[in-house]
Length: 460
Image 1 (cartoon, rainbow, N blue to C red):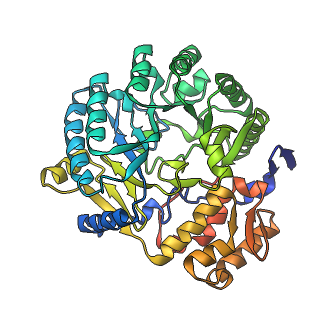
Image 2 (tube, rainbow, N blue to C red):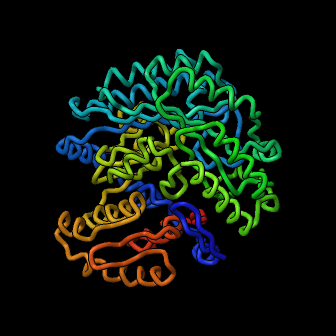
């Protein structure tokens, strides 16, 4: 079965063939490669090397708390109605900020900051201001920095939204997942349509520069017809960016998902029809298909970065500052430097104990080899720009691309036969259908895959 829409061509039989578990490649090596042999000293050495490069900074702050559990959630969260739990967390987060910032050259500007979770608006306005002041006391922000946070629209009012803009946030993101009440009830995320439009109205009124909304396909009771209504209402909502995630049903990894019966999930064919319809509707409504699961209006920074060849992927997904190095703060957060990745302890008690001991709260990490860095570059070019110019890699790493990646090129020839890539002497170009299956292309460059037994979500 073949069909074509602006910028994308589908062959459902090919999509089915390649719908296998693959890493999402928000990093390479993937997070599954991080290990406890990585030490605080390793991270300090990586920071010192980072200071020598004087690259700009991207900061991430993890607020792990939620008032209720969403059954689809794959994040590391703490469910509690006791708001006092955040007070202690912010005290320790402040200590981590101080200790880490002391190792980072003060002349390095922050060009991006994002607060995620969990639910950042779990914090009161006073606590938001406390954390904000703690950050700005230790870091200097570029005048055009992107400053964003995620919110749960069920727990905000107009005053809270206006406060966020006034304190300095200029971008905002919130989860819709699905407008359908039956689906919302099945995943324990009830948020009436009227409320979502009201919250978007406040966001537009106060003048946030960019608004992202998240949808999820593959949830209980979804059909092509019901999700089409969600897509139409989302288009009416008029966000600048839309992320449409494939629900990763992994109850063996995320016990909260055991609340969802597998029998209620749409079958594979229905999911493909939902995906087909989603891309049709959004691209016909002038949203650019960035890749993977992201769409953006043509004026949005995400679309501009892809056109300017400055788009990049990190643990937060696609990002517009390719040269920035990411520092993560808070329990479970990840730092991505040029030569090393480091993840903080996931359990709050472990996180607190490390800080009490005067240490950076590193739980695990990895030092990257030269081969890791080379392969990461190749994978990120494929994931972000749907093409790879061999000469750029050869010039940067002083290799003969065809010789170094001879095995990978043989695998690419098989993908070319199925129409996923187009190979030439100088370039690897991802086709329209290949953009939907870009993880299957990137995986060919993954030299560490055989060392991992981790189960990943499916490509579609």
